[in-house]
Length: 439
Image (tube, rainbow, N blue to C red; front, side, top):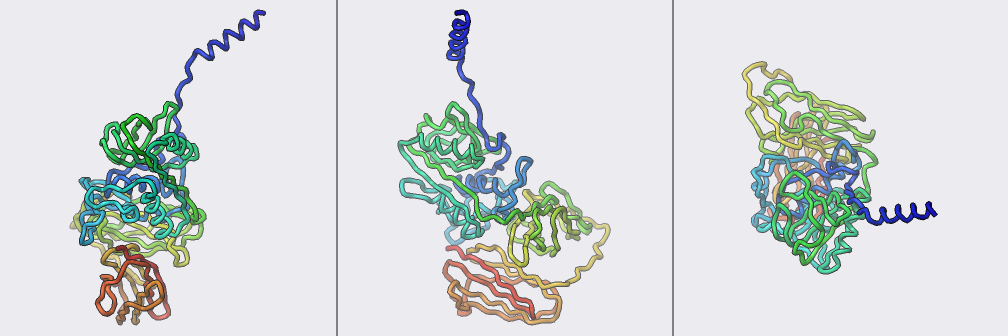
C-alpha cells in the first residue's frame, strides 16, 4: 500500500512540475551561420547568409564541397559603382566598412529584387527566393542544390514545422513574414533562421545587426509567412581552399614581400591564380599564379608601394583547368607606403595564363592573359548555339595583358543576355571559359 502511495505522489509531482523550454540550434550553437548586414535587399542578404553557411570555414564544421558559392568579398560602398542604366538591384544603405560576399549580386538578380525598395515579391504561386537560390548555385556555380519555397496566409503551423525540421537537420533556411520584428522593422522582411525553442520562438540572423535575434513565429501582427529551404548537392568531392592571410585588418608595407597563405582540402586542386584590389573590390589586378597542394600553401607577394586602406585579395583555384573554388579576404586591409627597401624582385613568366571576370556580367568583361614568348593571341567569343560573334587577334611579346570587352559583336551591336563561351589560343595553348551576360 505504501508503494502505491509513493507512486501516486511521484506521478502527481511529475504532472505538477512544468517542463523547461529547450533551445535548438544548428549544430547546437549560434555561430555557424555568418552574419551579414543588409545589402541590396533583405532576401538576397538572408539568402547569402544561408548559402555562406555551406561555403565557410568555422570551428564547428568545414564545408569544403561548395567553394564557388562565395568566390570573393568587397565593401558595401562598391555597390554604388555596379549599376546598369536603371540602377538595377545595386542599392545599399551601409557605410561600406565591412566585407560583403559577391554572392549577393546574382541572388538579387535571380530573385528579381526591386532596385528602389530592396524588396522581393512573395505570394501564392511565386518562388522568387527559391529561383534566386537555384540561379546562383546551379545555373552559375554548376552545383545541384535543391530548394523549396512555401507561402501561406493562414497555415502558419506548417511554416513552424518546416523551421523545426530544417534546424533539426542542421540546415539554415530563409523565413519571410510581415508584421513587427523585435528591434527591427514593422514590415515584410526576410531573415536567416538558425534555431528555435519549445515555446514557439525563432532564432535568426536579422540583416540589421551582426548578432542573433529572437521572435515568436506567430503573434506579431503578421498576415502572411513564407519559408525557403536549401539543400546542397553536386559538390567538389571535398576539394576547397580557405584564405588565411591577408583576411582583413592587416597592415602590409609597400616594397616588402608578404606571404599570402591558404589552406587546401583535397588533392584535386593543382593551381591557383591570385589577384588584389585597391578600390574596395571594384576592380582586380593580377598578382601571380602558383601551384597548390593539400595542406598549407603560400605565395610571396611583392606588395606594391602605394598608400591604400581598402585592399582585398582573392584566389581562384583550379583542377586541370576547371574552376573549383574561389576565396578572398573577408574584410579590407591596409597597404602602407614606404621609402625604404626598394623592391628589386622581377617576375619571371613561365606559363600561359588566361582569366576572365566577372563570370556574370552586365556591360563589361575583363580578359587577362600572359604569354611567356612571342606569339599571336586569338580570342573568339561564341554564343550558346556555337556561332562566333566576336573575334580579336594580337601579336604579343612576353608579358601580362588586360583587355575590356563591352558585350558587343564585331558589328558593334550589343548582345542579349545569355550564356557565352570565350576561346583563347596562343601558340599551342588553348582554353575555353563560360560566362553569362545578365539582362
